Length: 393
Image (cartoon, rainbow, N blue to C red; front, side, top):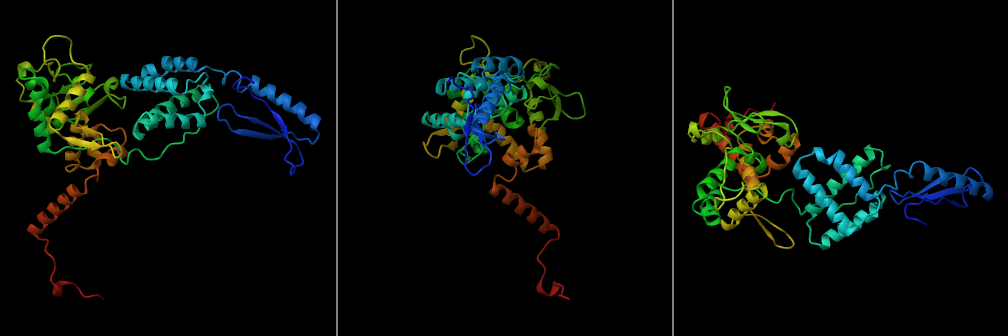
């Protein structure tokens, strides 16, 4: 029988008055059963044939025979093409891994069992649970789109490990002393001539909380791009939807320390991009985002700023551009309420702010509590003496 063909058989369970019709769903791989509403075997066989033709010609004929290549080409053209380039790149990576490991011919080849096998093979390739979870999230999104487009009847069940390396992120906020070490390491990574432009860039990341892609696209004087807006009462950041992770045009407050940092740039030089990190050699095109990311990580490694160690392999991750953003978020989480921090970090959902930045460092929170307690004690708050405590009535 050709793969994804549906064969309906007659089954006698013995404890039921009627015979049963049974077939395997080509999408989920699960058996389905329906009463034949008769105990006559001949009549049941006739109904099985009718149901088989109906299933083949109806629900599954057009949908479940859709090839994997046909599906993904349409998914790319109609859906992926409107998403951020980074998301498109990740989805292409997922497709490549699926083809390499599962080699699906049809979209219905992605059953729960096959997806479980895919995860196992990914682990053999030393992919982390977090990476695997990310791949599955992209794949689930693609299959959900197929359901929405009525290309398949349902998304197969995803069985996951549940935990991803024991923490949500492979990084942390770094301390001021660690950041100073990164600044000292700049010249060793990019050379003396390019070092000033890179130190300026690192300080900007430290003080602004910008994502790497945002920082490279930050302009002094372009309304159609992410730009510095100094026209109002307070300095702001204008972020167009195509550059914003939440896909919305936004006007957001700028951190005062970042504003003071920007104002050190002479007014005559406030044109074009705010950050222009140079190559070691000044020749060639502008540095790509990936290259900038790797160079910042090289500075973190040269400064020996370790932010995460794999619990099994012992592989070390060094401070990156995103860890500078984490540092910004952590510092401001000690100064402002979560709702304000959410806007400063440009999180679409406050749950993200709460999960990653609020209450993550018990020691720092304890310091804040004790400082507040000490401050209140200086004015009036002292422990009452025994004879000052009201008697219980």
